[in-house]
Length: 225
Image (tube, rainbow, N blue to C red):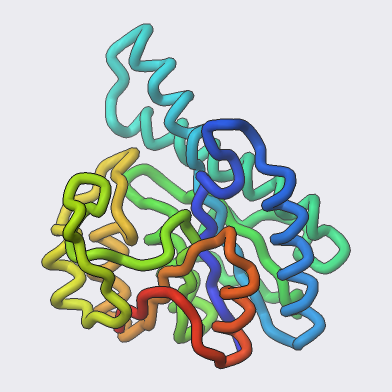
C-alpha cells in the first residue's frame, strides 16, 4: 500500500539542532515498512531551519512573502536531501521538487521537498497523494492529537480523536502563510477534503505508536476524513 508521510521539519531540526536520534529511529522505521512491502512517499518540512533563515533575512531587510517562501522551500529541500541520503540504499536517488511531474519508478521509498511559493509541504503531500493514488496522508509532528483549541493557551482544550473535514476546517481556518503553526495547512485541508483523502495526525517521535497505526492496531492520534 502507498502512504504519504509529511514529516514536520521540527522533528528533523528542532531548536536544539539536527536530531540524530530521530533520524536513526526514522531510518529504522522506513526500512521496516520497506521490508513489509509498503510504499512510502516522504515529504520533509523546513522546521526551525526555515524559520531561522526567514527571521535572519527580515532582521536585515524587508522581505516579500514570496522570498520568505523560497527560503522555507530551500530549507525543506535541504532536509529532504538529508533524509534521502540516510535512506539511499532503498530510496529513489533524487528528491522530488515538483509534485505535478509524474515519476516513473518502481522505487518504494521516495523523498520530496517543497515546491513553490504559497504551497506548504502539507499541500505538496496532498498533491502527491493524488498523483500516486494514495488514500492516506500521515502527518508527523510533535503532538499526539489535534485539539479543539490551542492547548498551550487554553488548559481546558479537548482532545479530538476523529473529526470530519468540515469541522476540522472550522478549527484551522482558511488561510495559510509562511510559518503558520497549525496541525495541517488550511489550504491543504481544503484540497484533501475535495480529494476525499484521510489524514492522520501522529506524534512523529513515538515510533511504537506509529508502527501500531501501520499494523492496524489501536493507536494515539487524530483521524480527519
